[in-house]
Image (cartoon, rainbow, N blue to C red):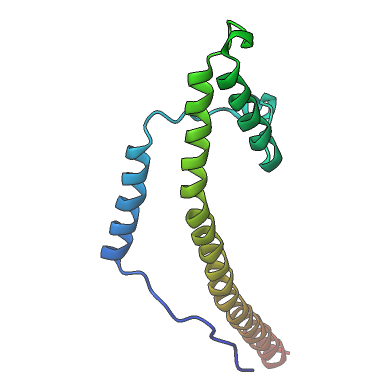
Length: 140
C-alpha cells in the first residue's frame, strides 16, 4: 500500500530560532497585557461584535453630554480600552490565520507519520508471531 505524502517539509533550526525570536519579540512588545486565570476570565462579561457598537454609541453620548456621565466612570480609560481591543484584533487576525495553517500542516504531518508507523508495527508483530510459531513447530 502506498501512503500519501501531501507534505514533505522541514523547518531548519536557524529558521525555527528566528520564528521563536519573532514570537518573543511580540511578547516583549506587549508587556502590559495581563494574563488571567481561567476563573478570572470566566467571570468577565464578554464583548461581542455587536457590543462594540453599543460601547461606541455610549462613548459618543458621553462626549456629547459629559455632565450626565457618572463620576465613577473614566471615559478616557474606556476609549483607551476600545483602542486596545481594535489594535489587538488587528494582531489576532493574521495570528489566527497562521495558527490555523500550522494546525492543519501538523495534522497532515502527524497523519503521514502515524499511518506508516502502524504498518511498521503490524509487520514487526507479524514477524514476532511468525518466529514464535516457527520455534514451536521446530521444538515439537
